[in-house]
Image 1 (cartoon, one colour):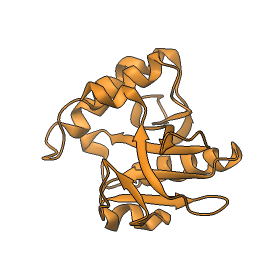
Image 2: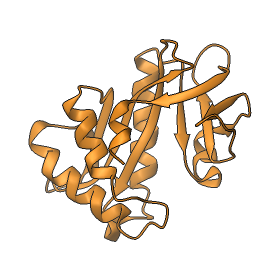
Image 3: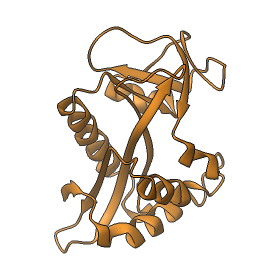
Image 4: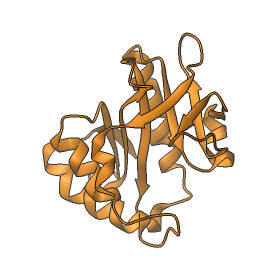
Amino acid sequence: MQIRDERVEDAAAISRITAMAFETAPYSSGAEPRIVEALRQAGALAVSLVATSDDGSILGHVAFSPVRIDHAAGRWYGLGPVSVAPEMQRQGIGRALIREGLARLAALDAEGCVVLGDPAYYGRFGFISDPALTYGGEASPYFQRLVLTGEPPRGNVSYHEAFDVA
């Protein structure tokens, strides 16, 4: 498996894999492929990586886009969606994509990253829930942050408007 930056010609495969990955997820609205496309169209994919097989087939994708904390500019990003082809899940592909994406954010001098997801899964990467950082005005154990540099932020997080397509 190789991990590389998304290319223009990858868009259809990314959309297909994202749709398949979230198809049976009970928490999914089915909007994930549209969110990725809207982020791409807005130029808001700060980091967009694919995992490929030896023959070049796309196995998975991860997106990182800018977020705002209480309407203040900063260098914070949101992780997601992350998707892996269903037949390839639980083989470390998502983990590798996330680790590489976080390394890329660090290289961009990002201050940190937030994610809305399973604390047991994202805790492996150092994400923690912080009641001082909210999403939708509420603290949640599923909303987590990872500080890459500086102090932990306080306030309410807003994702890019592309997430409103949900």
